[in-house]
Amino acid sequence: MIYQRLARPALFRLGGGDAERAHEWTLRRLAALSRRPAALRALRATAVRGTPRTVFGLRFPNPVGLAAGMDKDGRALPAWAALGFGFVEVGTVTARPQPGNPRPRVFRLPAGQGVINRMGFNNEGAAALATRLATLRPLGIPLGVSLGKSKVVPLADAVEDYLAALRAVLPHADYVAVNVSSPNTPGLRGLQDRAQLSRLLAALREESGTTPVLVKIAPDLTEHAIGEALEVCVEHGVAGLIATNTTVERRPAGLALASERSERVSSQRSPVPARDKHDGEQGGLSGRPLTGRALEVVTFVAKHSELPVVGVGGIMSVDDALRMLDAGASLVQLYTGLIYRGPSLLRAIVRATR
Ligand SMILES: Cc1cc2nc3c(=O)[nH]c(=O)nc-3n(C[C@H](O)[C@H](O)[C@H](O)COP(=O)(O)O)c2cc1C
Image 1 (cartoon, rainbow, N blue to C red):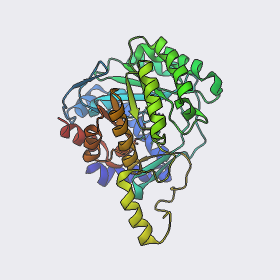
Image 2: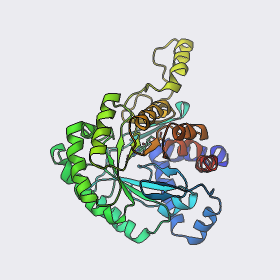
Image 3: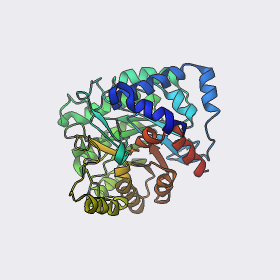
Image 4: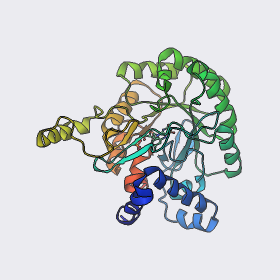
């Protein structure tokens, strides 16, 4: 409540409403807090104790994690742990440091409770992350590292590039997530196709040893394509799926949205009513508009494979999280829900899953 009444309006005004400025400010505060043991203790005292569970051989103190992209370079790990997250996924990192796309590249859609981003894997590179992780751990909660492809590396050389990133971070990761689903690196999502995914996973699994490898998929795949990706994952001993990344659809075919959308259309007499001034921005859409589609994908994956699923996409309330878990997710992750609801969303979900 305090977050929604006080912190959120201030954050949304910061930097003239530039969402990335608000994000950077928050991350700087959390990074500073991470260096102050007394502040961490105080924060930890507010965290909700959850029920531990073991998934792909790792013990999670609760099932609610921080999704990739929030802390790409792992700057505030002690603070995320003290807030009460059951695990954190840092990254996506690439083998080479890169600036990402030109700004502005993150847009809030407050009326629709969504975000559009086209960050393009801005990060300091896998070696810099590895150096930071080496000084930060142990964290007390599982740490995942999300890996992507460097933009300057041609798709034909993607396997070597992912391998270089993997080698750098492997000693510091409890699991690695192979991100082949970001819409903001040209051609990346093509790596979800059977032959390319198979080549990539064969190489990564040979190098990953006993560290679990997860694959993060897009919500825009057809059921057939998800089925194929699942087969390849099983074939190569992947430990789990993360479903889903952001969507390039602007009206994803989510169950929950269908009726809401038709009401909107009839009452406003416009086929695609513009509800937020940034609705038309390019990039990946997250948050409330993704809830239904992400749930569909998690349901499909859970039904068609034995692989553990990390459910992510449009979890904006306790009910959204419970539906993901009921649909078969072993764990869930939050990103956009934190922007709109703040850390009380995390606490409420941990409490509800005890
Ligand atoms: C600003 C922003 C940056 C993101 N960066 C990454 C990333 O680097 N790697 C990744 O796998 N997912 C990234 N994501 C996707 C999230 O991890 C998550 O899959 C997606 O936003 C859906 O969850 P949500 O609706 O709870 O936000 C990003 C999302 C946002 C909003």
